[in-house]
Length: 237
Ligand SMILES: [Ca+2]
Image (cartoon, protein in one colour):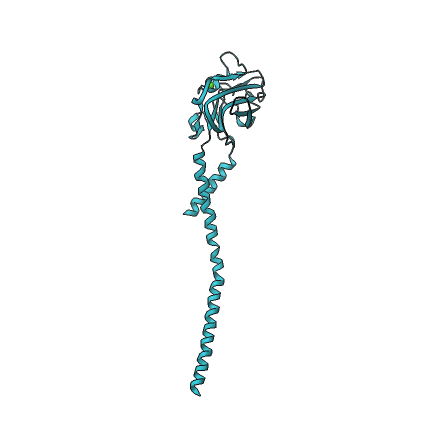
């Protein structure tokens, strides 16, 4: 039973390792979030600065938790910076496509870079995304995961160009907080699997010990035989 559980734990961790990147998309945010902590409410709306968008299609629409509103622009590179109400470790984002990506294909980012900063001046690259992160579909959320363990309070999104159009559009850009508490038990579960293998090996080593006991027993019997013969000879004298 323990072996079965260990095997399942290892299989799951392998699956998680190899699926780092975009998960299957969903039109439902909760489904795509898979229980993760979303930082939508943490965005300080008055700190948003961005490349201008078309009428009523500014970058503030990325943070309003409404897929029906979008950031739409033909000015490149498109840049958006914003601040959260504190420092958070982010190891994923959820990007949502807009109302007519299926009709006007190629409007997703060709590439995109997420930066983090603790002071709003010095930014470090957190993740570089590509066109393959999204598809030409409407109102669809895409979860993109990556490695990061540094907490930042300021964030910046940079998009050099649209994938295959003169216009770029995204309806939501949601930062996802790293769930470090969930990662710790997974590492602990793997340990017993290694211990079990070690326990099995001494069984093979036990054979020589048995042989030694047999050798000692045979020698003891032989010795007893010799003593018996000597004793009987003495008696016969
Ligand atoms: Ca929106």
